[in-house]
Length: 125
Length: 467
Image (tube, rainbow over all chains, first blue to last red; front, side, top):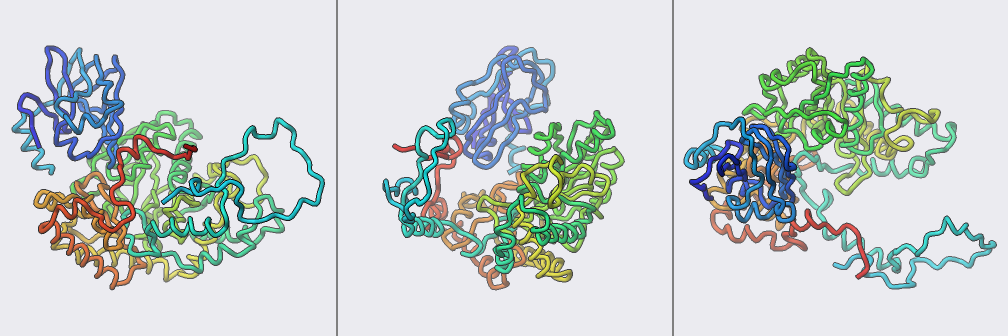
């Protein structure tokens, strides 16, 4: 289980990396491990508004369908279309396979650093 | 094994038909298909062997223990099957004149009367073909009720996060927005979370009680009162009725409509793809919105399925109720609860129950500590059970428990079977510490061990095409 120290994390297991004014969002290694092998990813469209704490898409694994929660409020400016055909990228490289990029950010939920997130995962495991 | 299509030999037949002794009549060209259908051509003995071989590849209740939580895989008495096979029931035509089907009408009316009594409802339809169809019909009743009062503001259905996946799907299919509420730490409805989402936009609440982790929600009267106070209605998902049938009634808990899986709780074998019957019952004020299912009504009524639904499933349910009787129905529920608690107590000490309290008809094990210690997952344990001739419990559900295994032994299992099952779980618990690699590779004796689930989900081949 890895916790990338360069990223911030939400309690619902998404990671965020700020790229200037753009938030790059993915799911953590803990999340992909808990979900199991992913088979489908539902993504929003570029231009869609997302709200902090609300679902922006979902992922389906061999176990279940789970919502992807947005850690920020803003507008989707890019989606990782590769995931539609290769959802396994999220399993294989959770910190490399980003899901969406969001700009026009007006709100961000309280995020954890890697150490605090690791502690949070320890309570959930 | 080969598919039946792959065994086909052109020209081979099961029966030799006598020569045609009436003049041939050609269909008009526009009614004819362009090519002959691709059907397997086989001799009768090879057809028989094919299906027997398939039968040997699967595990049914008749093969062994089947504690698939939330599914109530109990043994169904043969007498119910026998009643459904009576020619007067099995061969009845849906368009037969009223005078010819009075017995069938009586079966439907009697089953309705008994099941309304068990659920505390005033009326019932047998049209829906299965559980999810019943849910859909039930939530449409709620929608129709609000519409009839011109109450257009009610756009949301509340569903707890421990609910069966069909609940939110049903609400969405009926055009409602789904509001998920988190469970309290004891697995029951969090009253504060419920209060926070109730309002003039609440159309209703969908709930199973006992819930998905096998716990009877003791706040149920308060829950239904709060929903009614907000102007919403309460829908009872009958998935777990086996735990309480004849003991407590959804109607008395404050529910306005219910669905029952007759093919699960009331003696029709299930899990093989049907047919089922998702009977929907309701209180008197919702009865005008029910699809009509009484025999021989004039056409033109609202229907959710052709004719009267899967009638033979209703025959089995009535036979089951008549053989159990007024005393037997609650006794079956009590034994289901007793068996679940017995097995939970026998397993405790090895695998950990997710909620350490008296359960109803099913319980959930939380294998997260075991996985941390051994690396062996709930999936590995489930796969290992197959080698013992036991059907694995439900895995990774409910989602609120990590590494979940959900067991529902049902009332039809003996103490000997439960003792044996507990010993198997103990053996696997110990094996996890000794030889985790062996369990990662399980099952070792099954026809198919670990199918590629990702491939099956992403690229399912559901239709045979000739190579």
